[in-house]
Image 1 (cartoon, helix red, strand yellow):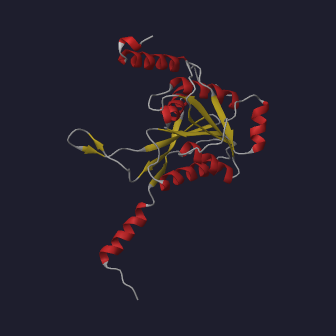
Image 2 (spheres, helix red, strand yellow; image 1 turned 180 degrees about the vertical axis):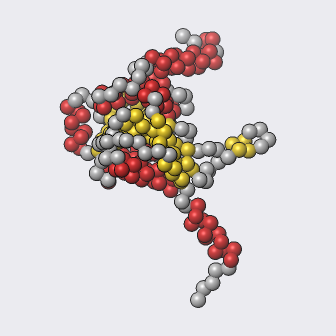
Length: 255
């Protein structure tokens, strides 16, 4: 009969506890009936966070639930001392709408990713959500100028055909969609909830892509028959990014 020494047993218990790596705090109970859910996190070009923050700001959404990482995968060096990150994502609501995500970064582990996806599904079911929309960046080498396209993919062939008839641009080829902004569609599909992913074209994933975010918002408005706000501010931010980039180039490369 094998025996565990106390140190080994303690390590096993710690490992088991750490796998439960998310805390969920319900702060209030909104009165919602069959809302749509928009769920997205920071990704290429910060697109997910830009869109989520834009919607929350313009619709004056109210926070009702928070998801927090119990064991972040990094620390913040403040220059000689460290801080622990306050890694969290909020559920917010407005009339007939739940918005989840935004914030900084994505889940650090597979356990966190799947725990968050399952929680979004649980909240969607709790309030009898009709649809889950997610969104992110679509990296391309096509030169976009100031008019990136937004492509959509869905949780069923039937829904795809319906969107094609309505003249929405379907994702042009097979690909892998990684991270929360892809996996959540898989969770929606396996739980019988219709889902649509909106992915806006971008050339530079490391730079905030405000025009891509604007394109996604306009497409989302057409899909949901909702207005999320005046996107002029996104044009201004995009122009400011362009100017900063151009000012860093040597004079001979400037237009």
